[in-house]
Length: 116
Length: 115
View 1 (spheres, each protein chain N blue to C red):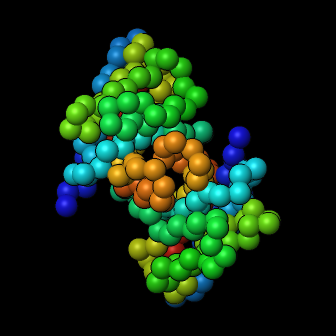
View 2 (cartoon, rainbow over the protein chains, first blue to last red):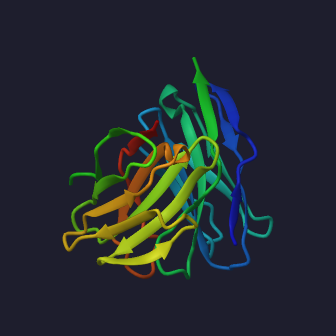
């Protein structure tokens, strides 16, 4: 069975600085998707970025980028130029490429606080 | 386009009762997934419905059930509520077809408290 581990329960960053959130996963599959979701205090989960395992190029979305290391089964999220609105819980998630359906396996989350 | 809606937003029940939660997906989405979020266990997948059929199921007892209607709206039911069922229940919708990342869009959740 696949597992997702986020080893940092809490992280903090100053406005305008850069922070990296860690995620490792375990799978025997070769094709899969990885996601980072953001859950602000309002509780609405928002997709931040996704990575297809067959793509070697790391995904980027504006200030958000990932460092995807397939062999190491690592998928970290880098937030550049942090803003107060980035404060939230961040979840790393895995989805099998081959499974029927869209079930996500989530890590336990990292709470990010941003100070001015 | 309207987002995923969940009703009710908050619910208080007592042990032994049953509860039904509702989820309306984004128009055109045929897949609805349900997740339970608790501080201890985090986010756990309950089940997924696609075109009125359960396509995938997580590791939850039979007290948790669901269904999907022809308009893709979904309900989940929890019978004989236990204190441990207190959680935020999240619903997510996607197109659900085979292939592709099938990005899931989440609703705001239903906060269930069992007393």
